[in-house]
Length: 86
Image (cartoon, rainbow, N blue to C red; front, side, top):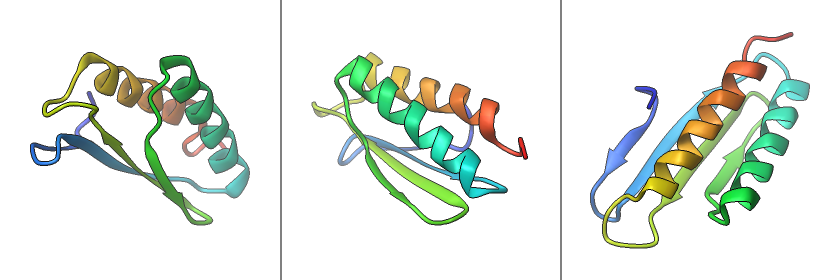
């Protein structure tokens, strides 16, 4: 997992912020994020502006599970596709 992710114990969660050079890439990232969340049936809290996306993945239990890390990994992979890809 990328160092961008902050791991918290209480509540068990992962959070990260993703920066983009343009809104089109940000939107494409959000589409992939939504598809991955639907695929895993695990949906994060998302907020965004014109050049950033902030994400918090809350675990469904008292500790982080494989699905939490899988969602974070999917976001990292999507970010590699769309970050600074003007």
